[in-house]
Image 1 (cartoon, one colour):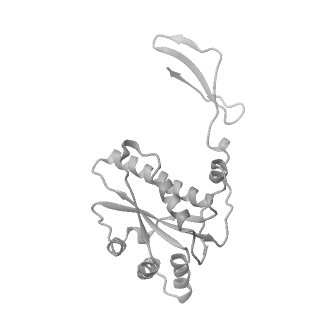
Image 2 (tube, one colour):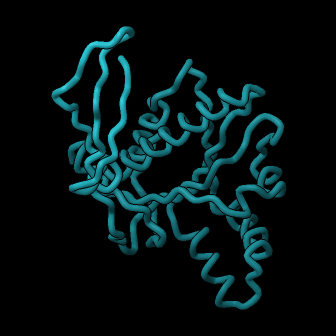
Image 3 (cartoon, helix red, strand yellow):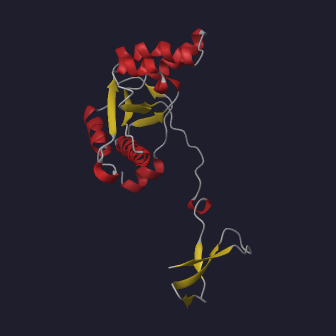
Length: 212
């Protein structure tokens, strides 16, 4: 599978078949994760692999937060926590610099995307999720994560997909306005004046000027 195909065909997998995955594929995916773009090379990501015994201990937290009182509701949550072959908890190292924290979160998001794409390339599904358990202090205590130093930014479920959803995706034309430069560009004191038009719909007159 080439990169473009992986990018366009990866999907968030909410349901998994029980059973293991290739451990080498997981190691490759984590290697891809730590090669994500990272401004100032802060390496802000941390991943904790959570075994089934610890997942069992997470269940009461999830049941309580989801107010899952019926056997059916609890079994649904149990399958979500226990069926995927692997649960990775992604955390971000904290910093007192607010702007750097934004950059670090972006880097962690890129790392998780790299992880998921690498897995997808090997035919393995994944899902990045948040929710109450990721923010609950009991989760931090159970996983041995110091909340003063790191913040959990999500659970990454990994395993063999029970089904692959196919949600609608926007085309590039739906999110990227077209910019055209007019022919009457002319020199000005501090640069060149460019008339640009956002060609979203024919006939619209939404031009703007910029200097370069």
